[in-house]
Image (cartoon, rainbow, N blue to C red; front, top):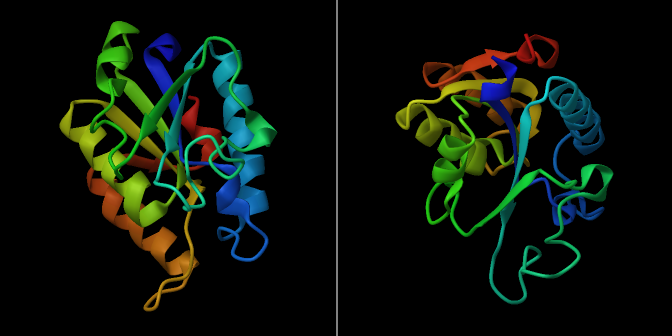
Length: 174
């Protein structure tokens, strides 16, 4: 069964950890995702990196240091990498086709930004028929004008339970 599962890491790029405005609990997020990657490799699961690209001058401008996947878990040979320009990791990419080609039917989601790219990708994966697991503490965001980051994360863990099994990281690999 594990060979039919992919760990999808959404937009965990260097710019998200800028000291002037880092993502909420960024260091904990990195440690959690590193553990997920180790478990995925041990289980023989495909690891997929999603990399958001924006225009010139943006912190996520293509081919800049901020755009790079965070160096604490850079992709290795055999990992899949997809660039996207919208919140939906499937839109405008061949992610779905590649997952189908690899025989993937289940996705474990982690990454940034809870209420935008993680949310949209989770809902789309569900709509495409994937069995989706969202790791409760493996996605993050920033405070908004209305809610604190912790509230946004908890809210999305609740709402996205309609589209995914929201699980603790140690339960994801079972």
